Image 1 (tube, helix red, strand yellow):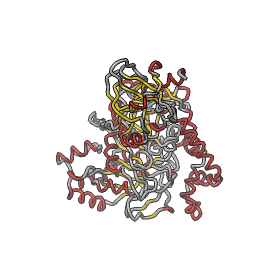
Image 2 (cartoon, one colour):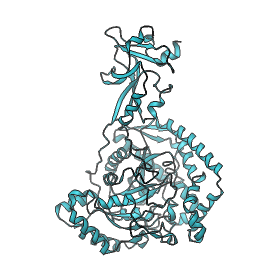
Image 3 (cartoon, rainbow, N blue to C red):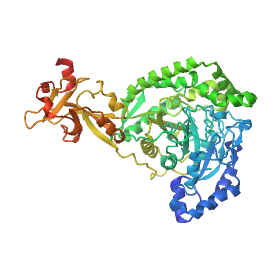
Image 4 (cartoon, rainbow, N blue to C red):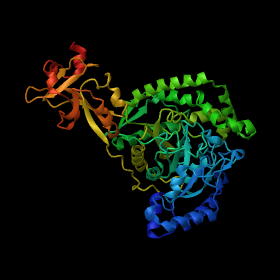
Length: 595
């Protein structure tokens, strides 16, 4: 018997011979029929087409296919070869000549595409009700919105019709529907997954995303689809990211900065859920949410809405009447934006990025509600723009600030509606986010999506291995000093502050710009010197070392803890005439009082 469609259950069932991919096809079709919600889908493949996929992968076998026999759905703004792409606008529709690279990688890995799912037209909305194909039914409460724009994708996974579904995420469309459907929603780093074959919303911000039942499933999909695409001008190669520390700092805004728009239950649930953070062994830290909130406002109140007009103006010139009324109002509003407005927006974003970076120095990952509260379809129809804006309160800034994010379930409210939170981190931290999310999800527990199947404790994702060099700095690379930017530009993070073992002398080097010290290990008469230990990603360490001018270099340095790390050393011959400043205990103290 076929039960849960999460990847772990499917793999075990295939391995035991309980069923085959061809038998799974009929079970999926039966479930779709029983679900009885045509608004979830825009187009589905025929039984014959699905069986062709199933028989092809059966001929290859599971050993060579990491997603062997896994059924999935595709948001209908992403191309599947030979199938219409409509972006929820029938007049816009075209037959895709080839599949988007992300889709093709999934098919090549053994996944079976079931069909194309409904969405807010042209991926413009977070509500899931802006489609001529109807409103996909939220499987928890029919009167509640499913969330958008990836509404059909989220519903298809939550209802147990497919194992996972592709969505897209520009303002939060891969996260808000996850929160409203008890799902995991992974929004990767911009450019990590190719966006060729995607109907653009805001092309410079768009990401293809994925909805799954577990973080482990999202990790499995990511392993298949992530990769540089030279034919996509927005594609980026993964440079690697440093591992998170054992004692993770999770940032949370102050209670005064959080907005739940009158939903007292949502507010209680969020602050109650913070207890789970301590159970995971993390440290809660407070940060200033202001630059993130102001960045979020830029997405629709700033010039980026003009990107939607750039993507659709040619179609609009021929078929303005084909737009959903709210969508048309939003897109046409961009015509008032000037080139000067756009540059003003870029300048404002640059300033906000700098302010946000200062807050990231306080934390490793951010924890926010996925959405401030749920809304009914009737509420959204009465206030379509206002409530859509509110739903993006905790999502709209993420792509503008080049961050990665994973939305995870956090239980059900007393009214039966799912409640979710989102972990957000700098770019390229998807694996670490999924590892954290899987531990969170295991602690929260509950059912998978809207099914009756419980979450298995075996769905834990391994964190990224440490791929960093621990480097001790003693001079101009210290925080706030002139060369510290060379570390930050390479993605380094401050991991520890303390002193060396008491076996060193510190000297002020003559004729250096900016001024620099030299550190020398001595056999006696040494002192402990102030250091900062930074974790530098291995991929950037070589270029950092290459930029160090003589007489300085990198060698091994002993800390007061006994740990041996890489650190700055100095050629001894230049120290003969240098001033010994060891009495100050460090370079920063010398700069403050030694001149």
